[in-house]
Length: 229
Figure (cartoon, one colour):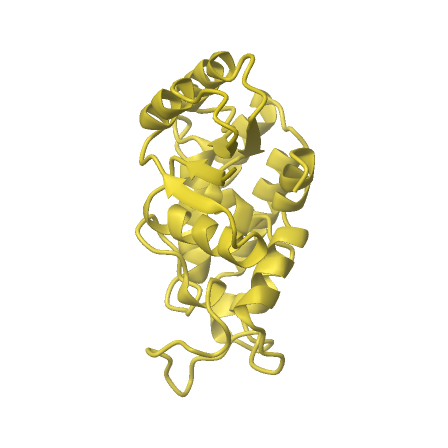
């Protein structure tokens, strides 16, 4: 019997999930299907093959494409007891929801922290809005307050915000790459300059410690517990 973790993420998302499960469950096989359509197709082809499948899916409630794929997935897993669905908002939101994100990225007296004070405020509001299951009216008000286009869904907002907060640091994350310092031990960042400081300078962590903290202090804890991880 083998245990698989499937996701639709590529680039930074896949790199993050691969590291998480390599650390926490090294026996699991992590694979990306590169799109929701391909992920659903692969799920439909699963039979009772004595393998176990954990499927990571986004649940962005204001993204109709994601919701349609989620409904297809629900139909695809009917009667298949060897599939467990890990529901998250999005990979980027998982990192935004991390309790110690600000403390890790910025040193105590870092000028960048002050410069990005407004972005950190938006992050706080977005995490609360989504975690509390905000209404459509509350979401609309949030977008208006922080000058996001009305058609911009919260997955895109989370991705943009995460990049804006982490830009020009070892934690810089975008669609193509996850921040080096999220998925490596301190301090192995080859591009680090003498004046590059972060909140972990005085308490350096191994990659195992980082992953453990990111899972236990973010939305991932509840999502993993829900499927028995």
